[in-house]
Amino acid sequence: MASEDYSLLDMYENAFPNSRKLYQKASTLFPNGVTHDGRYLQPYPIYVERAKGSKKWDVDGREYIDYWSGHGALLLGHGREEVVKAVTEQVALGTHLGACHRKEVEWAELVIDMVPSAEKVRFTSSGTEATLMAIRLSRTFTGKNKLLKFAGHFHGWHDQVILGANPPYETPPPGIIKEVVDTTVIRPPNDIEAVEKTLQTDNDIAGVIIEPTGGGFGTIPTGGEFLKQLREVTSRYSVILIFDEVISGFRVAPGGAQEYYNVTPDLTTLAKILAGGLPGGAVAGRNDIMELLENRKDPEWKSNKKMPHPGTFNANP
Image 1 (cartoon, rainbow, N blue to C red):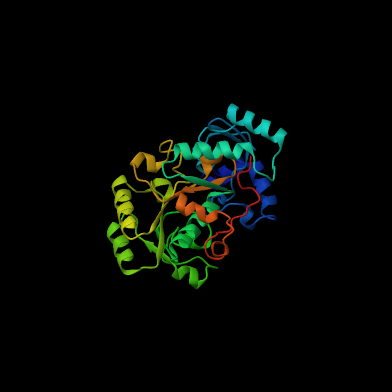
Image 2 (image 1 turned 90 degrees about the horizontal axis):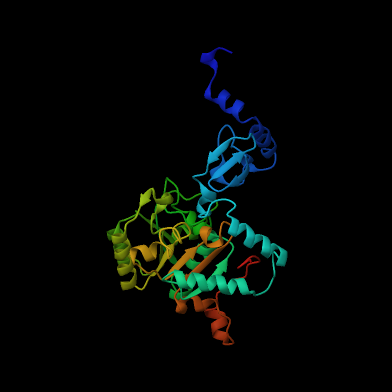
């Protein structure tokens, strides 16, 4: 082969032959051969064999510095000794107790001690589940139907929040029903005038959700001044303010962006770092909102207020 014909594609395939073999198998098993949209690469993704600290090694023996850090979940890096020890000890005691346990109490105490908005906590299995719960709580508490979110901000992949997450922001993804589209209001990031005008003219907004450090891992940055304005406006119109701190929680400060900017939301969603690099999420917030998850004997409460929330892996030890 002449040197001028030796393309980048040839170099890639020569460098990662074992990844290519795995991808050929994976393509017969998964759509696009992957299990996450972000892992779809052309001509094929690199397959990782192991990781330790800040490094990863692929199936062809190549070493990398890992700037991705488990989608932001691995604040302590890969294979941190204390984390491995704790997980190993718990596996010996049980991987799924199917009951209340001491660890969930200790975990919740830490969240409440650290996160300013956390008066009560409810654990979930992921950040997507956490935002789903927070939005439903805001609708239940206010008796209103609509959610206001910001273009380019990601809050998971359930129907209401995947709208406006990716450009073109005004075009809903396939499979989202019209009623969901009609109850989701998308506004430009950092535009407090657009938010206030919406709340002035639409009395059916239950909640506003935002990534407090900005969308796209901060590539669409949001500052403290806008958060303060957003807190003031939502309070004035009795709209629930939700900080999605799945990424920023325990990272920007021990108590998240809300501690750093000194702006306290009504509800906070958490995941990633929360579970030490393992699957897990939570909603934390005001007691008068979180109490909607409580069981009570009052029939009217059960019919009109109690928000159901099961979940096989909630607070998994």
